[in-house]
Image (cartoon, rainbow, N blue to C red; front, top):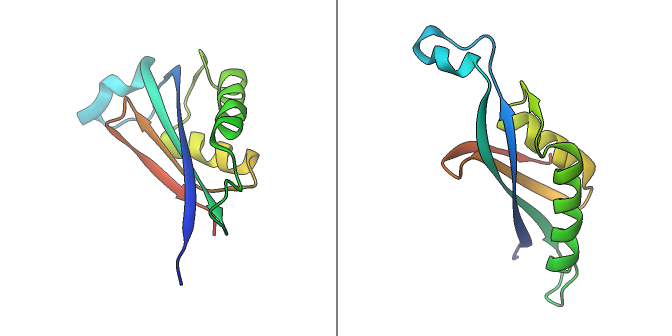
Length: 109
C-alpha cells in the first residue's frame, strides 16, 4: 500500500514574542520579526492532480496574508500550524518554521 501526498509552500512576515520565555532566552520576551515558512501536505488517492498545486497555493497565500502577514502576537509555530490545519480540511500535515530554520509540525489525527 502506498500513501501519496502533495504539498505547497508559502511564507509570511510577522512579529511575535514569548512573554514567559525562560531567562536563558529572555530576548524572546520582546517582539521580534520572522519570515515564517509554511509547508502544507494534503493526502491524495490518485496521480492525476486531485489537488492542483497553484490553486491550493493561491488559497493558502490569501489566508496567510489575511490572517498572519504583518501581525504581532504571542503565537508559536505550533499555533500557526494548528490554525492553518483547522482552516483547510484537505490539509493533513502542516509545518511552520521561523526563517526556515526551526519549527513545528502538526498532523491531523
